[in-house]
Length: 408
Image (cartoon, rainbow, N blue to C red; front, side, top):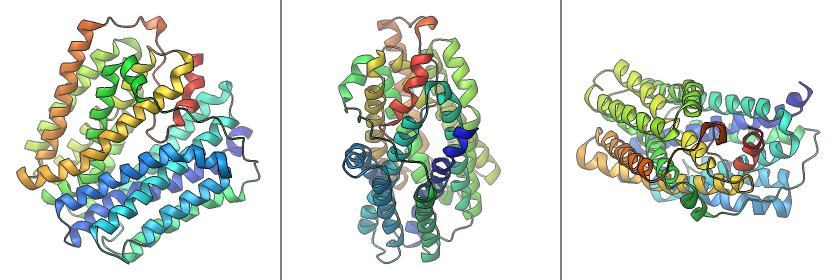
């Protein structure tokens, strides 16, 4: 308990960061629509966030090594707050894209600092308990962030000011903590080829996961508007997506540990395709849209973690941190492309087209899963790593979770 209390400042910072950064994406989509931005321009904003996210994941460990954890965290937080506050000063989509790059840098950099700090403070004996609390804090705040959309007015300086205040407030727990900052851990090298060598199927799966998650988070509000949802209903629409994904993590992990993970990915892809079809055909009422969002979250959310576990089944202990970073790299690449592509499909074919795009991605994953099953036999259960929920937060996350994988 003493350890958990000593880390409470970090968990509180995670909650405040998630409330700020998890809200700005859907708020930007609704605000851009209110200001007359085109669908393509709104999609560009979502893609810009992930450009900043990737740059932040790459550069944050180096900045931490030069100036320390606390100063790096302050710098990234200030960058995010400035991006939020500037939104209503310049209502231009290309200026907003630069601001979203700043918000992506902020979230990636701040999570890198927090996860590096956690990694240095905990031992293998405490790792499972601490990462479990970290996961609950992150997912709960993500759900609350979606619901904030029902409260905040689009294209309002007050709304962006509230998010900037939350971002700045994330500084306080760390600034007031008496716990000393840890030494900077060695940053994992980024070796994208490593993931392809260990599991090509995992690479395809994380790209498809990005196609699903980034599209729904960034373009979901536009889809909601197109099918006639009001602001509050859009908030619940996004919230049910996160809730579905959170509730299914344990059963999905249990199945992935008991059976061939490739079969689980194939079944999940089939279920996601069925969910996409239901969303495209039965979105006539708010209740059906929200129920479809819940099912879509439950089916698509576990793909990244299962793919990560499958890749780690074929990795050595010394490769785990670099493999996690490589998989997150491929997720970022997919997430950069997905929102803009989805927005263009809405323009050409209507709102249901985004679910068509996601369904095609999962169909490709399904087909490639069958192909890989013919090429390589399944790893025996006794030789596998245990399934662990893998947050898509920073390149450092692999080191934070590595102790659990080694122990398991």
